[in-house]
Amino acid sequence: MSEPISIAEALIDVRKAHRLIHTFNRRFIEMMQTVSGALPGFEFEQMEPYYEGYDKKWKLDSEDTVFWNATPYIYTSLAWSKRANAETVSVGELLFGLVLVVDSEWVDNEEEIDPSTYTVSASDSKTEITIYLLSIEHEMARADMLKVWKDFDTDHCMTLTKGKKGKAIGVSKAVDMATIESQDDLIHLVNQFVSAAKTMILSAKTL
Image (tube, rainbow, N blue to C red; front, top):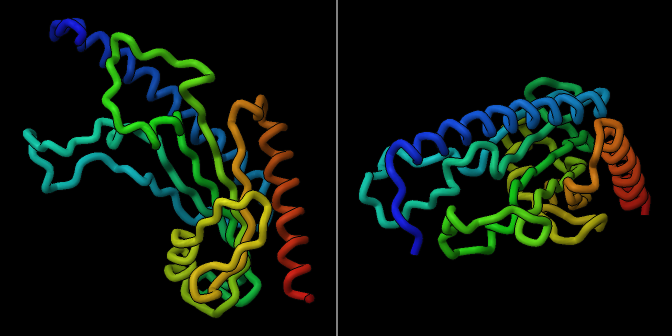
């Protein structure tokens, strides 16, 4: 067990973390702006952190506190849509989704981490994005389209998948962020994926 640290030492860590989080959040938004620029004709719909911190019922002595839950943008989904009407969604209209998981190794790690011994390396931390392209298969409201997107899930890279009740078909691809070194790499990834996914969706519809 590590030795307890003083309040002064803890506050130094807090200040360091705040500056790192500020930088990370800014870079995250810049990355999302780059993605938007690679999606001509698509409108940004929403950004939704999966973990928004602690809810209103949380108590200081809560035994089920998960410290990861308050980490900004640690697990965040974003969506863009390509459709003709602001409120309704027609058959064949598209939704591009992106889910970012920072330090994805923690998802499967239920053990508490000792900050005095924790180190970051390629073997114990990884950041992934999963990108999706969905084609809507039923008329629906914009809010319902976002529900379809939230429920749509697949573990099969570049495999055409049908959503719940056939409301959408789509393709997804998981990417290790370590392979994306520049804005050009990110733009190329988005363009290449959308082109391939559109071809797969169109081919399925013409069978």
